[in-house]
Length: 256
Image (cartoon, helix red, strand yellow):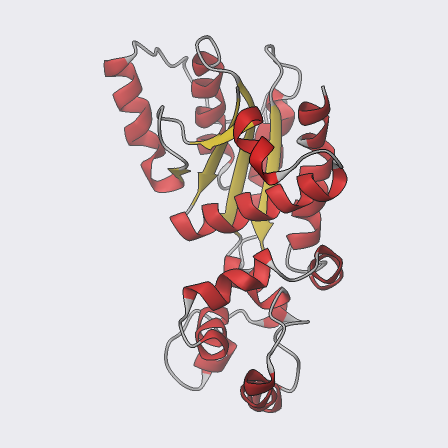
């Protein structure tokens, strides 16, 4: 049974990223039925029996591994093998990958998913890419998938929002205030404020207004909206790139 390690900011991020990945895998692999997935691979966290791990918990997880499973982390200098300092998230990603190297001795880990909100910090993506390039030729082989939401996961949710008749009026009102469609151009929603006048440009606020804070309605945006629409709308939010990463790195594992 394969394991794919998922590193995220929250449970919501994990649900979004893994469900999207499963949809892409089922689309591209004809024989991969939903009931078969659980017999081929599991989404897991760094700690055995967990479904994901959070970025904020990585250091504690590493400390616990040293105590519980005798993990000994090698000395880390904090820069790329070419002598270039790691950008944001690069160093912590290397720590994760070193621990995964150790865990592969007893677990069938085939891939790691690094899922991150950019939060107006493009250097986060650069750091993740640095970590991947550092690890690319290590053995045993490990695929590294990078998913960076620009600026937040909610931007991906908006990419998949298809309004019902009742929701059309709400969306039209938001479009009028913004002067653009927040579902097509969700990457332009860069505010983090809950206060006016910037509140209307906070993607979290827009998602709440459109879905009425209903998580089931929110889930429909990534579970039911066609992948074709998500690919078309997600070019600037990182969603299209994430789908391509799944196709490039995870499909070969399933087919091997």
